[in-house]
Image 1 (cartoon, rainbow, N blue to C red):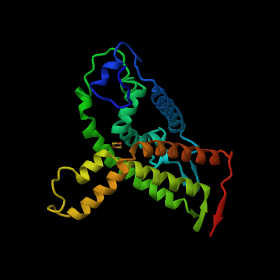
Image 2 (cartoon, rainbow, N blue to C red):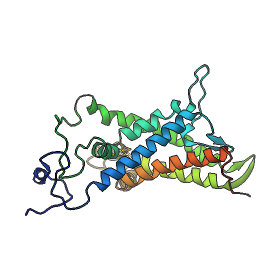
Image 3 (cartoon, rainbow, N blue to C red):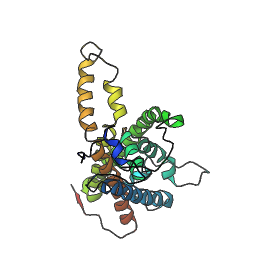
Image 4 (cartoon, rainbow, N blue to C red):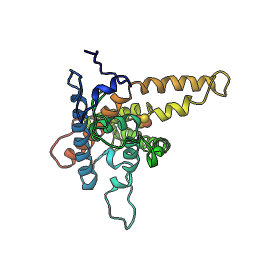
Amino acid sequence: MPETTTQCSPLLAQFGEGGLGQTRRPDRWWLAPASVAVGLAAFAAYSTWAALSGENYTFSPYLSPFYSPNFHVPRIHVSPALLVLWAPLGFRLSCYYYRKAYYRALYLSPPACVVSEPVRDYRGEAGILRWLSIVHRWFLYASILVLSVLWLDALRAFDFNGHLGVGLGSVVLLLNAAALSFFTFGCHALRSAVGGNKRCFNCSALGHIRYRSWRAVSYLTSRHPFWAWASLYTVALADLYIRLLSMGVLHDPRVLL
Ligand code: FES
């Protein structure tokens, strides 16, 4: 019997032939795509409801990350979250890691390495999808702008009517901004922008700085899947915490300095 492995290779792809889910893999290969599908569905359901609700998103001095920056456009009566969320949503949907995750978990294309997928005319990321990589870079720039506002929100969360203090909400918003930063600055497109198209760092202007930046981004890129999930849930938990405070369900423990 041929050796089985969880690594993809053209040679082993034949093991997965024969219809959806057919494989000789002895491990519980379905666990990863199933967990991804449940995780993404839970986040999509909660974030859609929270973004459309348009209320209970602030509890002074805290502001939900779903609603920041907090725009109000005169005569446009939509939830403020909808004016902002296109940037982080587009950033995540076009992310290289998330594409792999949802192609496997939602489109079953393929469900896992060496596991058969539904019969379809596979064309890869052709047609309009080939622009995803370019579009992703623009979403990255927009998300960095949103992230800088989230950092301001996190710092404002330590200001209690002019008194410096720390509340549980301050810590929640700070951790969320940090997790989102580790996710954003580990982006593959950023790694390429910082260190790509260079044969020699020493020979280029600011080469030393570029090299150090590339090393730092590369470190985060190697942990990109972890921060993709961690930041997805810190942002949802930050919204939930502020929502429950605003609804009077929770009390925010605080220490004023
Ligand atoms: Fe994941 Fe850019 S590759 S955010």
